[in-house]
Amino acid sequence: MISSHYRSPLNYSEELLKEAKSSLDRIYNSLDGLNLDSESTYRSEYSKSFTDAMDDDFNTPAALQFFLK
Picture 1: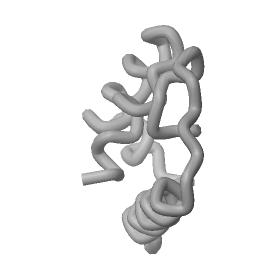
Picture 2: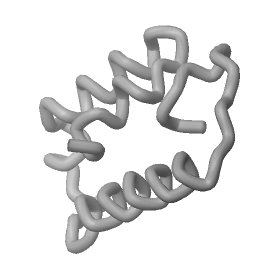
Picture 3: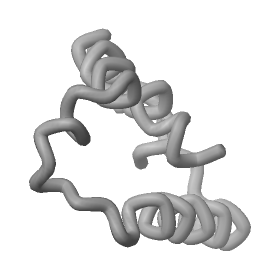
Picture 4: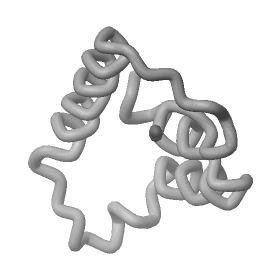
């Protein structure tokens, strides 16, 4: 559900579930070891990009593009 816009229809298949799991694993690996209590974490360029994308009609795919690379 986070790889497409919330207004778009969702496609379901076993292959897409495997891709979603792989994407989620990449997000978890990206976050592993980060100190999320640090002020500098929230002020990064990625934080601004994330906020801008979410403010753009809840554009989750754009918001998470950094983590999904």
